[in-house]
Image (cartoon, rainbow, N blue to C red; front, side, top):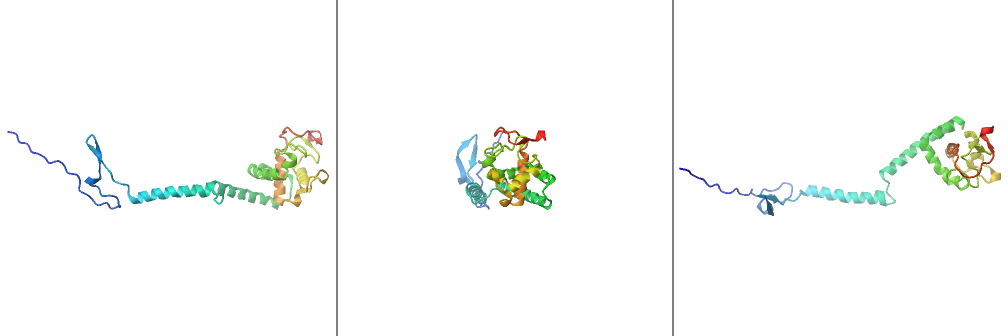
Length: 210
């Protein structure tokens, strides 16, 4: 003789108050669709999570507008570049403790990042006569092996840049530039030596024949 017992269907969980402000989990929060006997709860995300999400979203928009689209903002990269430029300037300023010489100017020439800063001074002050790469326009080609004044040494360059060539219309830059700018400019012209960029025909004498 067999007996059978009927088990009542499992009831849905009773509604439980949610501590985080979301809707309570209960029968009314079940979605209508069913797949393979599985029904899905429609339980909203916690309010604190939603607030953080939207706060982050609007903050990111404000960040992009302020630091990348607005002229008033300074990006992290721009701030870093400014700090590095200031550090290079401080490093260059220390060279003023020594009198100008081949050695002190040579140290500036060896500082590639500092020479990139000096290129901006050359572009602003000298490119109108010597062209952007120093290949010469009104003024002589600074990249070949011919020199009108001196023998192409750093101190020769420093002297010409400082005192100018009034007869040729070149100003004395020592009257317009700060001492460190003057040294950096002379050092940058020194980096152009030997590049032999095609431009104005050679002038003066060849330093190979001295």
